[in-house]
Length: 74
Image 1: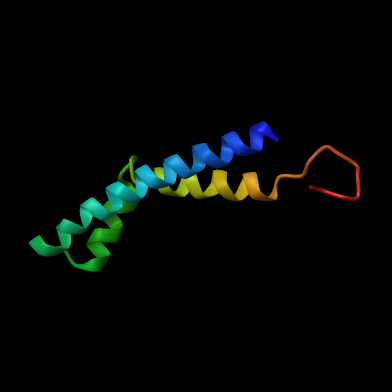
Image 2: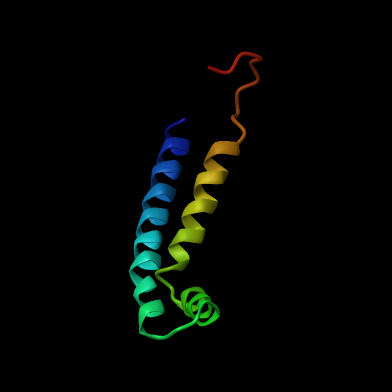
């Protein structure tokens, strides 16, 4: 249970940091970039990939099977 909580919080932190960079790079749209150039720039930045890794950690922590064999999961 502790590993699931840790991986969820770690994923949440990564997603937050990545989204912070994605939002801060929205200023590129005001200086003349179009949307496709913006998306191309975002997917090539390593710090913006933290968003993807964060969401992967969150999904894995939510759907991770427990080792218990009980019918009642609390």
